Length: 286
Image 1 (cartoon, rainbow, N blue to C red):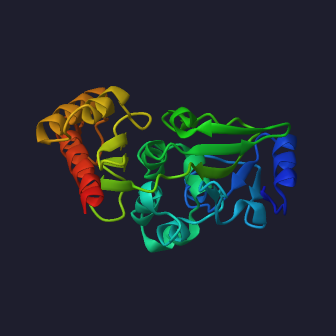
Image 2: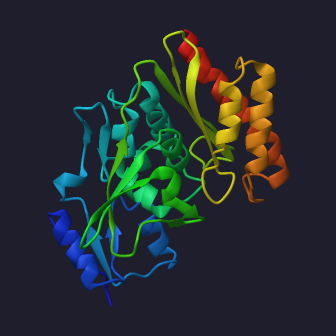
């Protein structure tokens, strides 16, 4: 028996189709879903294609400076966007290192984020950017902080009958910067570990805000506000950075897998944090 394919042209129609068949699955870029279907990890009776829904596409700057990214926006479009600057550049940086060009051309931010893989590149970047995830269901629209959206391995706050509609990046300060640092075995692979950093400067050119999120090091992106505050209370020198990086690393819970042992990752993570923060701080000082 074949898989039924629906091609709605509106968000309301897509959500209605899902509410009528809970086992149907939304099809975004398909780079993960189709692979899972080919290996029979999932066997949906129907697919709800999202590629005709114009309201899910594109990058739009809001009047207040926020950036709204439609769920069907491709990784390639994000990687080349001249709108993702200042602190928002952390998301562009993550998009640039996702897999290979063919996947970046077809894969979408909504599909990737909905999947909830902690080893993927967007989760840490969105947490560091203080992003909001906009989801819509049969009766309401919700905005969920990225830090609250990722719950566990392959588990998100997205409910069965909800569709991820957009990612919203809050307005970035004029003197803000973002950087995404990824360590992987080979180009195009998932991260062995990754670090996303955003920071901003006050009028005296002092760092007055910093976010550090570590990816591929636990069931969700790891962020330790106390370590960030330790840096803000310091001169941001090498000793303070080492202490903060070790504090964040201690909160990580990396797995043993083909990309590295837990012990190896624990050695890597603080060094990667120090590198990512140093690069971002250097941008601010340039």
